[in-house]
Image (cartoon, rainbow, N blue to C red; front, side, top):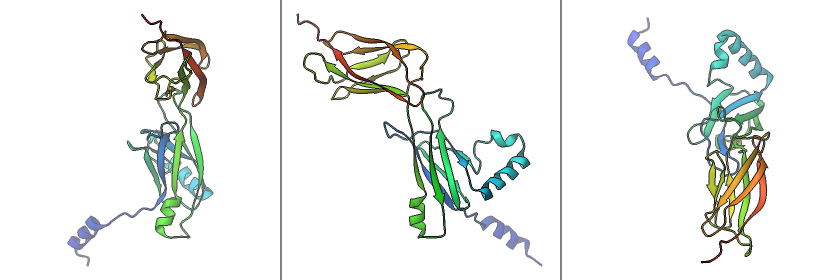
Length: 226
């Protein structure tokens, strides 16, 4: 007869072992900074895994679509990391998107082959790494002195009426984003720099979600000296 104490001890010390099959990080395509809260989904999966997902969906009913964390769906952490466990061998397509942010970012996807049959565990983990770069919606360009043709440092670049702004770097280059896409409406870009006349670029048609609008050079005229 089994000793109840031994059964309790075995239950207490049992360890669930899982295999990391796909892992990686979601990052901003321009800044290379990690993105938290991105939804990462397996949108194409091998037949064996598809049948498992279908059974789980049938068993869980309407609750299935509401789940944030499923064998085929997860969200990136504060450091941008994500992972999927115990996937059967085969080819997968991984798609990342940032929900609840309007059209400030586009989507991205990559394919990855899962196979645990060859190589060392370290090599397998390295092979399972995926970088998913989300393209931001933004406007970029270069603010220069109209006469000297040199870039202006710390010129403020902003969209009128939106509160979205940024500053130029040492070469006068700026990237304003991520911003809300507004490809059906015109917007006005304002450039402000100490010692220069305010510059406006009106009738800018905003970029589509996940696209960068390149304005090229924005030339500013110096104020007359007193």
